[in-house]
Length: 222
Length: 402
Image (cartoon, rainbow over all chains, first blue to last red; front, top):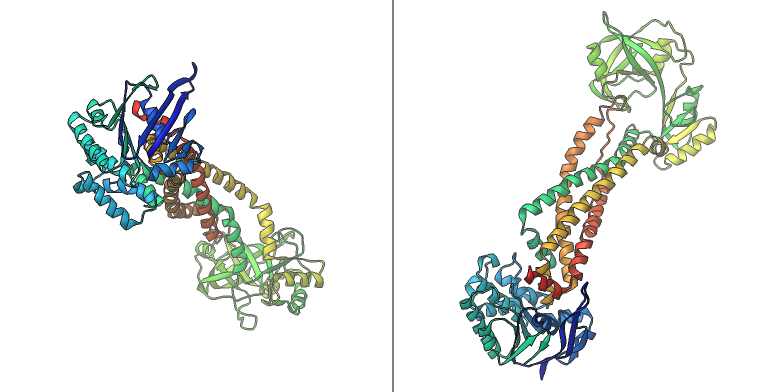
C-alpha cells in the first residue's frame, strides 16, 4: 500500500516575467517501508516535489494522496496534524531550536502530539540511544557538531513514529565522512520499516536507496 | 513543555536584549503608572482632606465652590437650628479674617486668623502644647493656637503671649491689638506648608476684637448622623434654610473635579496615551525583529507539525514576558518617581500641606496591568500574523539559498 501517491503534480510560481513551472506533471508513489531517492541538478524541482509530498506546500494542479487521503482538500490544521504524526521532516540546515537541548528538541513534537511526559522521556531516551547520542542529551545545538545535530534532527523526525521520513539534502552541510554516518542511519531507519523519501545531490547517499529517481527541469526522467 | 516554558527559553536566549526590553518597558511603565496615579490622586487626596475633619457637609451663604465666603447672618441661631435637625450630629461655626501678630519687640507678621466654635482640634493636629480650651474652661480672654511656621517666625512656644491685630474685610479698622496666649503649636489641615495661620475661639473673636456681627460665620461645618448620611443632611438643611447653600463633601469634590481638576486629567490622558504608544512600539519592534531572525526556525516548526495556534501562543507569551516583566518593575520605579514628583509639585504656593498629587490606589495598579495586557497582545499581533502566515516551503527554500 502506498504511503504517499502523487498524481500529475504541477507547481507554478508566479514571477514578474511570468509563472515558472517548478514541477510539470510529476507522478510519484512511495510504498510503505520503501526507500526512494530523488536526484538531479540544482533548480530541477527536487525540493519542490519534496515539499509537496511532505504536505508543506500545495500543488497548482494534481493530487496528493497520503495514506489514501487527498491532502489538498484538508484544512491546514489537519495537514499540520499529518505532518506532526505521520511525516518526519529532516532539513538540510537541521533547524534545531537553539535554546533547547538535544533531549528537549526531540521531545518537542511529542509534546505537541500530547504524548504523556513519562512516555515522551522514555521514547526520547530510546531515540538518543538509536542515533548514538545518549551522552549528549543535555547539550545545546551550539555544543554539537554538524553530524550530531543532524542525528538529533533525525531522532526528532522519528519521535512520533511517522509512516514517512522526508529528507531534503540531509548531508548537504556535512563532510563526506559524516555524510556516510548519516547514510548509515538512514539505512537503519529503513531496515526498521519506515518509508523514506530523500532528495539529495550526494550520489553515495542516493546509491543506498531502493529506488532512484532523476529529475530534470521539473519532470521525472527516470 | 508549555508555550510559556518555550517562550521563557526563547526570551532568555538573548539575555541582554531581553533585559534591555524589560528595562525599557519598565521606564515607560513607571511614567504610565504615575500618570494613572495623577489622574485621580489630587482628587482623592482632596476628598480625604475634606473628610479628615469629621465633617461631611459645608454650609455657605453664596453659590459656587464654598471657599470664597459671605458672612451668614445670625450664625449662632443657625447653629442651634441645625443641631436640632435629626439628620445632624454636630455643627461648627468658622470665621476667617486677615490679621497681623507680633511678640514684644518683634516685627508684625501677617496671618490668617480663624475663629472656630469647635475647640478640640478637628481642623488641626497638636505639635506642641494643647488645643484651645472650651468656653467653660477658658481662663484667658484670647487663647490661640498657631501654625508651626508662625511659631518659628515669632519664636513663640506654648504659653507665650502674642499681640494680634484683626483686619476685617471691607472695613477700615484701627482696632488695637489684643494680647493672646499661645495654647499650642499645631498643623492646620488646610494650611500650606509655609502659611502663617492661627485659630482662636469665636467668643474670643467677638469679645476681644469687638467685631461687629462677630457672631457671623463665613462657613458652617456640619457632621451628619451616620444613619442619615450627608445627602439627607443637605436636604434637611436646605429645607430649613433655603436661603443658604449646603454642599456635601462629594458635591465639593465633584465641583473641584469639574472646574479645577480637568487640567490634570487632560495632561494625564495625553501622557498615558504617549507612554502606551512607546511601549507598544518598543515591544512590537523587538518581537518583529526576533520573528524575522527566526523565520527559518518557525517554518521548520510548522513543517514538523507544530500548529499555528501553538506558534501564536508562543509569541503571545514572549510578548507577555517582556511586557509583564517591565510592567512589574515599573510599579516600584513609578512609586519612587511619584514620591519625588509629588514633593516637587507640593511646593506650589498656597496648597494645603496635606494635599498630595500622587496617591496610591489599587485601581491604578489594576488599570496599569490591564493597559499593559492590551499592549502585550497588540504588540504581538503583527509578529503572530507574520509567523502563522509565512509560506513554509518558500521560507525553507529561502533559508537554504541565504
